[in-house]
Amino acid sequence: MAIKVGDKVPAATFTRFGPDGPAPLTTDELFKGKKVALFALPGAFTPTCSAQHLPGFKARAADLKAKGVDTIACVSVNDVFVMKAWGDNQGVGDDVLMLADGNGEFTRAVGLEFDAGRFGMGQRSQRYSLVVDDGVVTAVNIEQGGEFKVSSADYMLARL
Image (cartoon, rainbow, N blue to C red):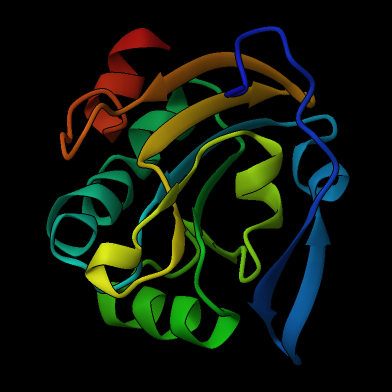
């Protein structure tokens, strides 16, 4: 079952690329005492993700932070090196925290995995966004099919 409003974010560990290379980041470290805008997508360097989803959050980062968001985080079932390269390619800088869920641990824990094997991509994340306040989910926006509407930065910003 997919995560819902009022749920506590499940314990999991992401990998991010820090100043000394790959480093773990637990959900507790990410969410405790902060308001986080988290969005997840099927894959780095994929068409909609690269043309709209990530660029939208990069473009609206200041607006989201003005509405009380402390951290904007992007999650994908990709490895940390791919997430770093994609963040560099997209010029996200410090605006968006690029998080690798390489084994899909977090994605499965929130119940939002899907099988993209028919595209040669294996298990991936559905496209969605969450607002998490001190570890508790306050908004869930899950896309249906191949759509890109409710998980966008603009959609989230209009509801904060």
